[in-house]
Length: 198
Image (cartoon, rainbow, N blue to C red; front, side, top):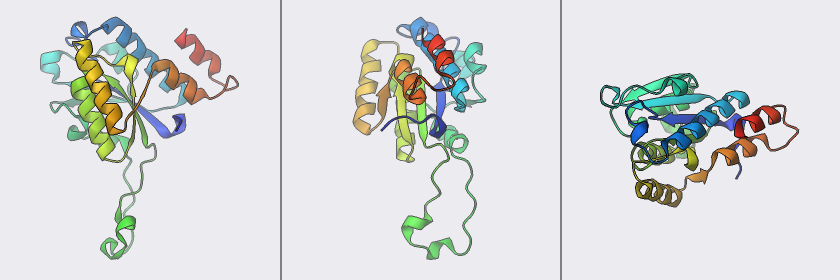
């Protein structure tokens, strides 16, 4: 299965002033997060942000905030627990009639307009992991951009990737996302995206 730009939305989790200096390979990770946000903007993908306990960890970095349509302030490690799903899944129209009289498979809410959720952030083994697992449980297709994620240690980060892959999340890199969404060198945004990657 390939990622579709018109079916996807991006969530940039917890790139914060006090947190980023403690992250493993933080400069490289942040540069990739900024590339992701720029690619999302070029390809028309909505981009959301989160910040974890900003009184302790500082606000979301301004260059990340500038890429996000909205930023969710949270105390729970999973952004889903704080209402992220409401942003990712537009409200559905109520079904006419008595919904309980419908067969069970028709009682479910309509699928989201953009069911593919691309996630990157810090810390991979805490906020990214818990948010991704909750989104999978909420029946989203989850894609985790590994080179835009970090933790304080490489071991914690890699353990998160192992667990996410085992749970059904797709793992990819910033370049994989960019070229997968373009599909062709004939895409109108090919040169602009290529310039961001180089």
